[in-house]
Length: 74
Image (tube, rainbow, N blue to C red; front, side, top):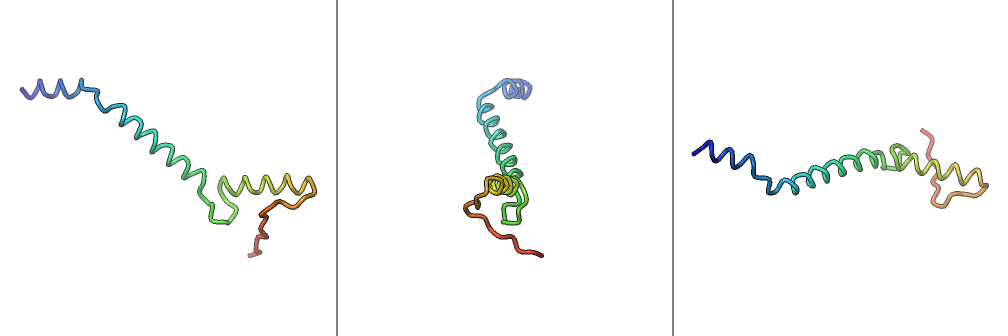
């Protein structure tokens, strides 16, 4: 009886897709967390690098980047 239950349980694939989507969602959340880390205005992380790139492009074009913030010297 227990063996039949285990065999039936192992072969049952209902809900597997929901679990896979859950794992994919968690992986995306962790990836976004790492990509967006350092967004506290200290110029680190993906957002800081993107902001620096656009500021560099704007300065090469001879215009001031909108929203450019002077970084205080430490």
